[in-house]
Image 1 (cartoon, helix red, strand yellow):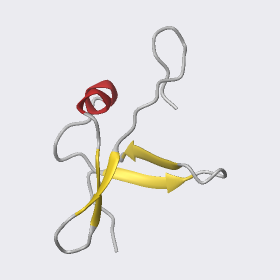
Image 2 (cartoon, helix red, strand yellow):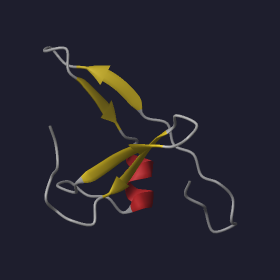
Image 3 (cartoon, helix red, strand yellow):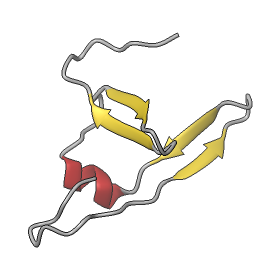
Image 4 (cartoon, one colour):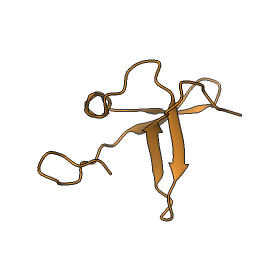
Length: 67
């Protein structure tokens, strides 16, 4: 989990929405995108931890990986 300058955990909450085709997508808060330094076109990797939390991070490679 990211930490702020005071070494405290920082939490952001996004929303899961559904498009007209039934596909789910996540809308990230602008504050989170700025905090993480993400920008349009970045490839984001997804993982889950032992507690079932979803973790998203910027990929080290710009090559998208998908189904």
